[in-house]
Image (cartoon, rainbow, N blue to C red; front, side, top):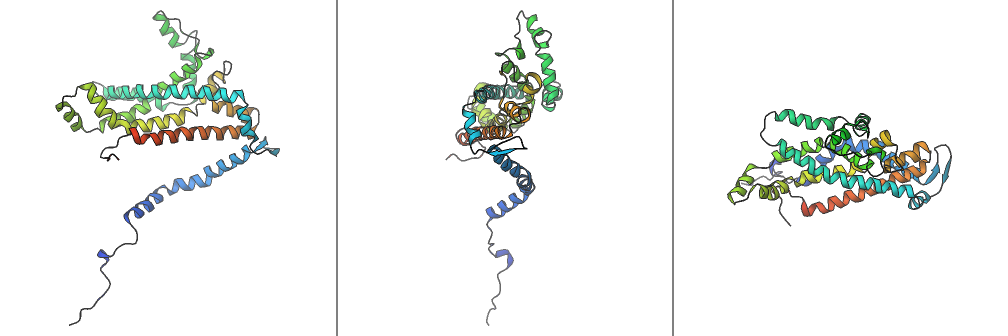
Length: 310
């Protein structure tokens, strides 16, 4: 008796889409709203900004000058000044922020009374941002009646002039940035609570003390969180603007002239929109270089649980 052949059951058919392809399709569907937003608004604005940077314009009169605006930057002492100020702020604030926010997270991870209240108090400064914070710190850092100098005077220390001093203005901005360490602290706290206790128990059995457990268990397991915070902090710090605009307008003697403030001056005070757009693209390229540098080096120091070493 002949056996009839027919189509294979659906359950055993081989799909022409691999699992990886299906995952990629699903991923693109999930991010499609963001992609639509990017291409409809951001990409167009970036392209138009690039076109403006090739012109000498106040948006009413136009003169195409090619790459002259970019060449002008290399001869502009204020551009280099703003770059030094921004780099000083960024590469001082970011390491200090990592150390302080991680230290607070370690304290908040202990079993102490009123822990919820303390966590809320440390996080609250991260909620309040913008001009209000700058004005508040303007009073705190006032050299005559500011709370910080009054506190230093009680210790027998004559406080600096802070925002009125070329040497102490940027450190004052760094203090403002550290005040909002609660946001990063919350991420570190979540990372600490996600570390399996079995790792600490195994390290203790092997004879590791508290310091060794911190170095060889806590830090390696926290490296993904540290990586994220460092990356976001670098991007945000290079774009510092509000403090300088509200409190100092770049003074004294351009000691707090950040790159974004200089960009703002050229665009919205001097109406040199072509040069301002070139400055914006220069800042974008600088941030991109440091972002790529952090991402590329992360393979050598970021540890993911369950990852196989190559």
